Length: 372
Ligand SMILES: *Cc1c(COP(=O)(O)O)cnc(C)c1O
Image (cartoon, rainbow, N blue to C red; front, side, top):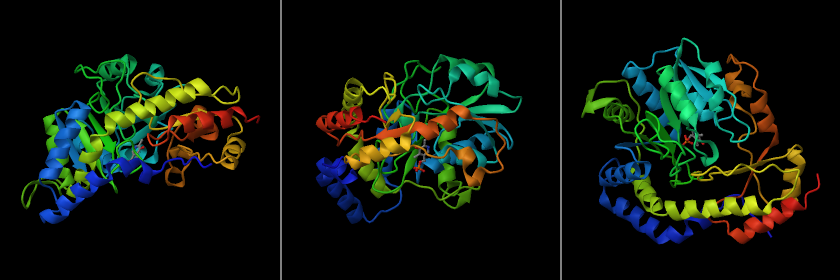
């Protein structure tokens, strides 16, 4: 018996006819940039994220980069300004900061949630701190009253990296009364990389915000910086959401609630059935959407090999944190022992909505038989 980590073909199977029909419609339309598919999907996405606006772009990284560039253009950020970001995030969160000439300040996560330790944000604040990039890692909302309080006190922008958490809800409401990730901060980036909770059939991403001026600048930046045809206000990019991907995503968004419910059932099944003292389970945060189910164990590589020998595919998110990557060899940062310890001990288990709960229970039984 094999337990695949993530089988995208199986995941997309129930919606294959709708995807094919939607793709055919775009192919036959003769319009392959912009248009109704993009507008309809953006409207649907803004409704899911509880924001006034959604702007489709070419990837999650571009969404983050365009958000920071937009805030530089509004004067809220300037080159050299510091942005607090969790040290254990995916590389793209940090790339978006440095590629905008901003300075990442790597913050240690809370090892229980893997998200920013919001009770300790003050120690990362300097006179140059202007923003927090909070990352809803593994689908767990990273937003609470301590984060809001620190942001308010120091007049910081709050940008959300919502790449992994579409449809999640924080337990604490934002200053504007919303709880849905993507609507909590000033602006948010989402990724539709195929393995994300809503995945395109290729790359794409989006910016969600209720700030009309940021939405407008972001849309312009994604289209060469144009304000109208052949008039360029900013030095922008070509980073647009393709209508064929918008059409795929509109179909998939209809399955979001059902898929999220399946992920939550699977996470709960692991929580009930894994009872091995060598394996630490993630805490059950209300409102989480379980992009990953991440356990930790001291002899991680032996544990993974044991599972692999019994057919269970696993993954690591992420084995090497950004500050230890060659591309950031020159980055100044303090010691990050929590981040490095997590990178050595974490293991992601299969959690996809296409994984039946019986398989989750079978995987738990294999995990419980592991003796180190
Ligand atoms: C996937 C991801 C991104 C980048 O999204 P892409 O669409 O792959 O560019 C950014 N941040 C996090 C946390 C991610 O998981």
